[in-house]
Length: 340
Image (cartoon, rainbow, N blue to C red):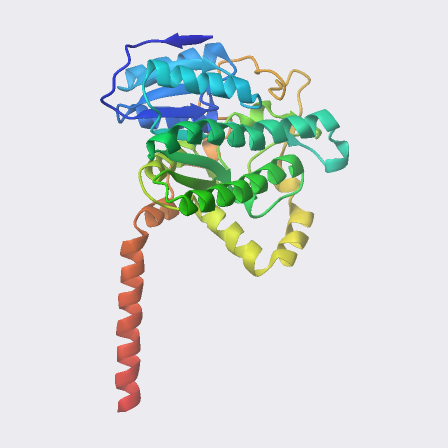
């Protein structure tokens, strides 16, 4: 099923966003809409998809919404065909859809583990496959994988999700090498996200007594959306969002064993609030959760709209030059002192 609120045009770039009806995906849709993009919105819930499409139109973009489960390759392929038929050749494909289950590994069922893997990992594989099938033939386009600090540093209670994010990184690195080998002008970038204030924590399946929460610091999804937009228009291999993401990656490279001990002792409490799980809690693992969820979750008071690391990441050449200049002056000053 599809719905469209505008006539197709070929003036602006055509963008596909999976998981576009809520959370980070919805924030990404808004960001591209502000720049006048023609956006194919892919998700499972028609009500939230239609609401996202209205927001896109109100912000100056053009929207085509399509119901698809990214775990199903045929549905993803059909959605890609519809986007190209009704909006034009796809310029940017953003793999954002995800699912998770909070709980100790031994308490997860086989079906839960498979579902998280199919949505979070295979969803990005199928999206990339559909995008490259079209982009490589035209020798242009950009695929953006929405990753996580957890693609480098796993944490307890989210083994299925962490495993999927690690797999996405390995898969993406392999595909990137193949594109380079073929001298293709198609680009692929992975954007590693920090903890974000999205509905993920309000509707994910849990095997816990207390309400799950993102590990602080918590960022609002607009931070991630701006990073994805920037990454989609620059040739960057990876883009890390938030100081916590950078810290997790560096910590895993330098002291992984120490992080094992630290997270083993703190990772349970840091991912749960004091609020007990409600019997009426929604669950979106196998079907869309009811409700009018948008981009933000329930941690508004603890989330920030600013990220110094995002600014530095966008302007790293300037900061690298400044650092090199400072080192040069410091060495010159040291040399003069030693020559006295």
